[in-house]
Image: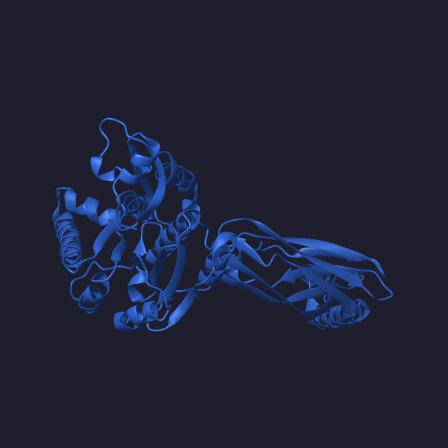
Length: 436
């Protein structure tokens, strides 16, 4: 049972005769007590006369998936199986990060009729959004009180990463097509395969002349090569405690997701095989042996529920997980946060064993504010401390980047918006130079 604001107004109305009777010499408190008893009786009668919410039958409709920050609509169909009109309110119990409106939906359902309520959502967090029940209030005829009931009606919407870096994909695919077709390389490299023969033009590299084809054609013929396909690209996302650090408007893990999705989309278009691992001490997400148009949906679905873990990443186990994929990767991209010398010891000690056999990129989302504070001259005492802390942060990041380079890998550091582009540009450069 619940009461409405009308009851408060009705009780307050009893103050008028209370004042009048006090002037007439009658005991006002006895009258007011009788008034309260009357109000309680009216509440009991009104609540009993309210239609029962048990006679409602609810049906939900919600999309299985949506992207972060994209509005989505869910619906609740309310069918009244009772003999009387039900008027009241309905509240859907979505969690706060779902972005559901705080208002309660109005119900006015005739007997045997169905009312469809639209509940818009604006997700503010990745992962699984759930609503396990709705609460229905049925108001009595006088509007003083009514019945309230919780009705189980589970619903779930999986919120996927936004993939805002998709806007860079078209331009990178155009550059990839240039590498793959119009501008075939003339010198064979480790990551190239034979493309075609064409006539020799003055200025071409004479080492690429095909003498047998020249003898058959009676003209000087040149071999051209194109970036090799069917290479294996392994992307490992560090989900340890450093991935929870805020960088820019988000956390490092979000920037890693964007870089992984953009690289996977481009590599899939190039004909390479992409394998994804999210790891700290356990495998949090894994996508392997998935190619073609189903690759990106599988990746975003696997990454959606992944959250940073407050543990240091076990890099020996992480590289063992890469080996367990059963492929020989041509490129390994490690998306992590290696910018503190003390915290990077385990990573740096395990890195040479992997970098000795394949090309390794280490991508890190950096804090632009720290670099700006380190470059700006201090003007007061607070700025001196801020400048010193920022300079120490930048210096440590450079030391770790140098150690990564000496270990045989290539560090790639940029702000969260630029990191995905830097990663895919390096991938294209490796393709262009025949190293992938």
